[in-house]
Length: 315
Image 1 (spheres, rainbow, N blue to C red):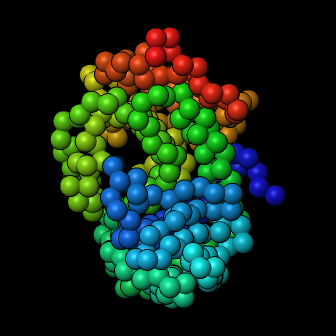
Image 2: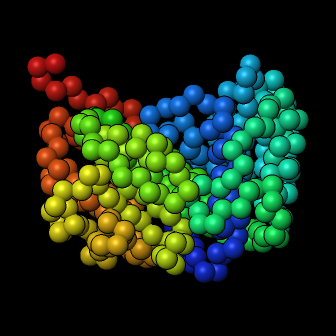
Image 3: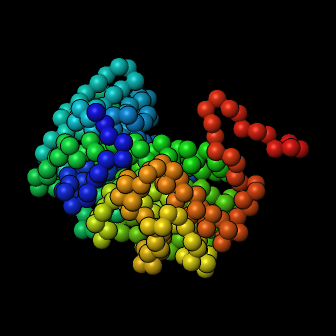
């Protein structure tokens, strides 16, 4: 049975996490290759579902397909709109093996598996087809990771309801393997400088075309050896990094240019959802206040099931 807010110490499943990251890139790139571009690369992301991660519907020519990593039964499932279904086991294997099995599954449901064949946002990328090194697959660690994502997803979705302006879905960016939600001021942003590892600058500049307050979670890596929440603003006003945010364990990392909060601080708190909401709200307020956002026009009370939003007077 899935545990809410499970422990997910990164060093214990580092290699499995690296494998899952690359496998998520492969299915995400399939969605990217077939889906018309949506603002800020929202067309390419993956979504948390009760049993794992999914592309959602992918328009593949005249077909509709979907790929899902079932992280409880430990299978990849390919589905076609005509009822076709193919699957294979997630187990210790190379990235090249995963690529070949995924291509075969997509073909089996009538799709066309054409993707960009090299990883993004990782150092020293090796083409998927040439990455033949064996990789482990720790089933228990994967289940715990999914349990964490499910718990986080519920809070992110709740936080999303308190904003009337443009706000992203809660979704997983497979390039950096982070789960994120982003609010927008509605104003254009200065051109992004680019320079993100193995990511075209044009993609970065489109992603940050407008002012944002963004928060998210990643399981560890890239010098941060534990699961971590983050929050940043683009562009960040001078006073952003000096703002007081909650909870007390949060800190500003000057090198990364964002607030960080260890997942463990949330997991072990008396109220994990409430504590995470405090982090999301306080870092957003820091971005909005220092950035001069029109908070009165952009914000609303948090949503409740079955209750329509109140209509402001005079509308």
